[in-house]
Amino acid sequence: MFLGGILEKKVGTRFATLIGCLITRVFLSAYTIKVSYYLFLVTYGVMFGVGIGIAYAPPMSVAMSWFPRHRGVANGFIVAGFGGGAFIFDQVQTAFLNPHNVKAVGAKELGTSQDIGDDKYFNDDSVLAQVPNMFILLGVCYATLQIVGVLLLFPVNSGAEKGRN
Image (cartoon, rainbow, N blue to C red; front, top):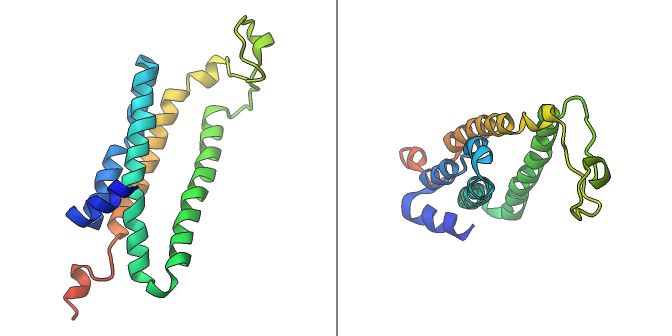
């Protein structure tokens, strides 16, 4: 998150947020998951994490500039929205990947000799085939929300406000 604050000071709020949004290209994971587990970790784990980290801080400073007497409340709404987004997209992913509520199976049902403990996995082809398409869906949803967010993001002392003074 500190990188977002540094970028914001150097290039401005919108551009720093846009850089973070451009790094969070979830749809790339639709292709890398077919190629390599480690490449998937780079696109979904590292790129998504770094992008979110960069794009997370600038909206908080903007919220504090709009509500200087209620900074905690403004940032609380941002954090709640971030958590609420995870709740919403969890439901979207489940509905898209597993609309028929296919159950995950354990080691006995999988017929594996590996010690996987009490973990359960999906082995149904209809669920597994949807995983790459889910990343494309999420990428489109995230990109749309990010574009709208960047367009609505401006501090109190932006160019529009300076023209009025």
